[in-house]
Amino acid sequence: MDSVSDKVGLVVGLMEEFGLEKAVLEGEDWSVEFRRDAGTAVVAPEPARRTVPNRAKSTKAAPAAPSGVPVQSPTTGIFYSSPNPGAPPFVKVGDVVQAGQVIGLIEAMKVFNEISATVAGTVQRVVAQNGQLVQPGDVLLTIG
Image 1 (tube, rainbow, N blue to C red):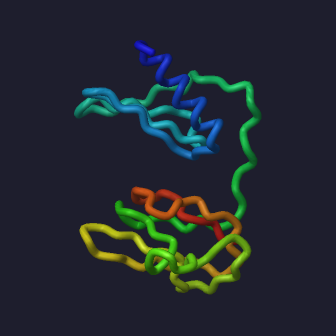
Image 2 (cartoon, rainbow, N blue to C red):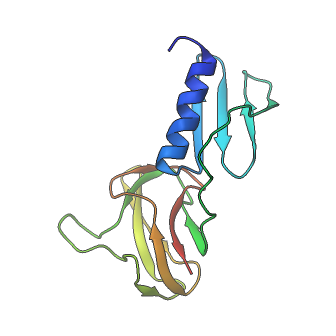
C-alpha cells in the first residue's frame, strides 16, 4: 500500500464497513478529510487549503441517514459513559432522557466535564464508546 490512492480506497472501505460519518487521512504535509454527507474531500497542504472531488466509489448502498438529534462532543477528550468504572452507564439505547440530563463525561486535561442531553426524547443510538477519544463535533449519541 504505497500509493495515496490505495490509502484513500482503504479509508473509504473502512468508512463503509464501520458506518463512519467522518475520517481523516494524513501525510507529512497534507491531510484529506472524508465526510459522508459532504461528498468532497478536503486536501490541506500546509498552510493553504483547497478542495478536491472525492473520486472514491463504493458498490455498497449508503446506510440510511440516522434519525434523531445528535448530541455532539463540545471538546476534545476521553468520553466516559458511566460515572466510575463498574457503574452502570448514564444512558443506554431506549432510555428516555430530559433536556439537561447528564448522558456522559468527557475528561479533558484531568477535568471531568458533564455532557448533557440537548433535547428530551428516547436514546436511539449510542455512538461513542466508553474510553474513546472524541473531538469537537463528534456525535456521542442520538436522541429521537
